Length: 93
Image (cartoon, rainbow, N blue to C red; front, top):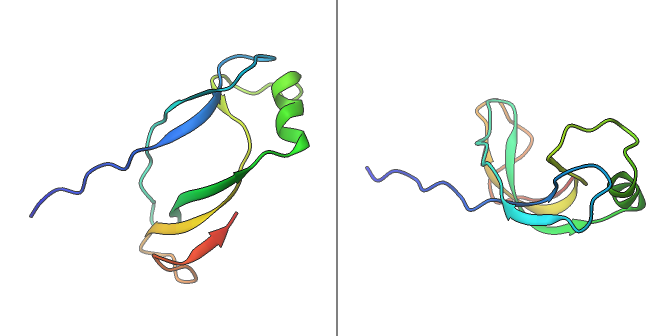
């Protein structure tokens, strides 16, 4: 049986507080756990809180950090205990 290749994963990283621009580069891939899913992201949104977090160190974030979590995409993997979402389903998060 052929091993499944690790998906290509990238993120927009803030390398340090109050820095611009974000660095878009490779990011670690984390497979789904028993009670989580992996979403293949097709769209992202940047909201005012995301750029405020980039300009000001309001929350004491550990850097490097990925800011923003608003996405739309398709479920690529679902953990064994996930019953309400299915691979191939379109989702927003």
